[in-house]
Image 1 (cartoon, helix red, strand yellow):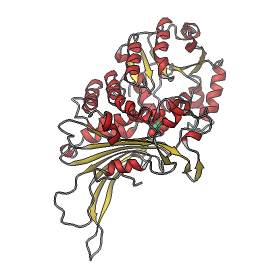
Image 2 (cartoon, rainbow, N blue to C red):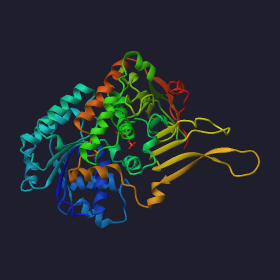
Image 3 (cartoon, helix red, strand yellow):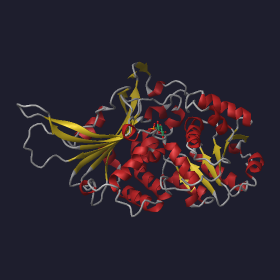
Length: 487
Ligand code: BG6
């Protein structure tokens, strides 16, 4: 492994949830793996009025004591803590960035300088301008933008213009943490480093594809954000469409930043637009009502504690979305891609299920279609469901069985969190797993008409802890299909 280069990582929103829950634990794990240079620093920005010691104490309490990092190596934790700095600045109110931050960065212009904007999308443009006005942009600078990138195509374009006026496209890293998940990267390897799938990876052999991201958690405490978002913007526009792209894309020419992203963008452009009446026919939206989840009674979306009282807007927000999408190209003509995601569902499961067609002529009773299940979480792995004969004499009985590749059992190594991989890619300047401007905008172009058609409609209620709205079963049932629900 080559020696890591020194870097300064400047986190806007450095005391926020994302920094504490994801970024700092990921960086600590990378540090443990020897992937951070000795001089690398993390500089957290917030309005918090903290000095370095206060901030390190806060990180101790919120990251280490909360059990987010391994505890067995106190010396490594101390070394990591020494990398942490805090700068108090109210950049949102126009306070210049140059002062304390400028002094910390001065003399380190040769290092990779990463500005990580863990802040709402409307701050991206103004924060980038503040960085520029403080004279902090160097040739080795990068900016990381957290999702959501806007709330529709127009706002995404505006943000891209504003950020693009200051940073070159190859300095802009638009993060979608699903792309950093191990199984997602393995999907590309599965498809393009093996020969047996590619000949049957098309409409001739595949009946349909299901992409599911089911969560058991609700939106507790986040209704403020979620009221302005909903499942379509929060999960489908980015995570689910990215999974669809990787499943449906053509083999790229090379495994490099432009070739992979070129192929993904072609998939987004091939999505059949859903407008007007098509939206009612091919989409479902739901909102969870009270129910039982994980053995406990839980409130519905409108009664979630920790948020301001619900408004008319809250009543219209979907916490569940299902869509039947079509990729209109030679490979996928006629193959439905069913996307679904929801909060407060019966189990936590993120997976891609590729269901193959039935045998053309069945000579056995009781067969079942072959399914390839690519499981992102929990228990990352790949499972090929085949039909086999149950052992025994007498009547011939068939049963679907799985050929399974469990990553944990096979590789016996810790599966890194998505943010570890992505942060190391930012430090190394590799944007392959980040969304290019045209990708984000193509995704919004497809989502926008669905948003418009949904405007002002009330989502169907579903019971918390259940499988989602009945209309989603009807959606997939119209094609004579059912959702894959097995564990
Ligand atoms: C985030 C969404 O992007 O992804 C959250 O904003 C969601 O609402 C989360 O809970 C799911 O991520 P993961 O990695 O737990 O599947």
